Amino acid sequence: MTAIDLQAREYGIHSLDSGYVRPRLDAIHLIVHEGRAAFVDTGTGHSVPLMLAALAHLGLEVDAVDYVILTHVHLDHAGGAGRLMQHLPRARLVVHPRGAPHMIAPAKLWAATVAVYGEERARHDYGELVPVARERVTEATDGFAVELAGRRLSFLDTPGHARHHICVHDHHAHALFTGDTFGLSYRELDRGGRAFIFPTTTPTQFDPEALRASVDRVLACSPRAIYLTHYSEITDIARLGADLHRLIDAHETLGLQWAQCDDRAQREAGLTAGVHRIVVDEARRSGSDEALWVETFVNDIPLNAQGLGAWLDYRNKTV
Image (cartoon, rainbow, N blue to C red):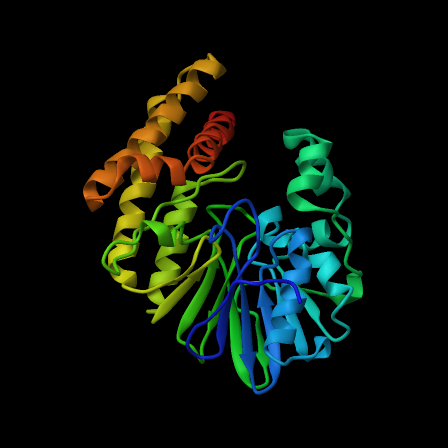
């Protein structure tokens, strides 16, 4: 059997390491209730054997899976969806209406990925994108809900990180699966059981105003716990929500400092240095090792900077 890192949480929720980039970076969540199951996010195409192994480990057949739910269609969350659906005869794919076309016909999504990373790296990191038949796709509009053996899962339209982002409210578990809307929280940086939070402003649809509103929608649900894709369960939600607001504000302030810069290389360098400073400031605030924080955020720092640049480009066109 494929080796897996599968952790049992409360209320039949399981966290599975997708195997993307490094350990405990990218979580797939599996909800099991009354013998029925749903995946929330799928990792990449390389994650499919791990998901099938997780089902087997829990004594579940592939036809026990009723839903594969995508918080959004960035490939570290959705790259394995099509290949996984080939193995799940009863499952429906649930995705934001803006994301559905990219799962049904992923050629444009793949072309955009190749344009950024190149063909070789894209295939290495994400595997092959497999289309999902239109008749197996359910579009999750705001307020839509499904039942998993009587367990209600409802959906919130939560733009800000991406315009095709949804969060999943698990009413039985008093919890939300928030993809990237409620930020990043890497477990290796926890100290004394105290978690941290950090926003992800990756390209190309970061919108600070929309993201703040989406965070408030999550907080208004008063969840017992939140399950992040990066990485898994957090509690102490009110404190983390306040920190997330503060850090979204800090990213917005940083971006605006470079709004009038016409030299794109200079702007990107300035934004990257600014995000680096925010990371170091958070390390100091938490009393943690600054070098460990910078190392852990080695990929997120440039991605956040690029996302701020994309936001500035969009803002400058619309102002």
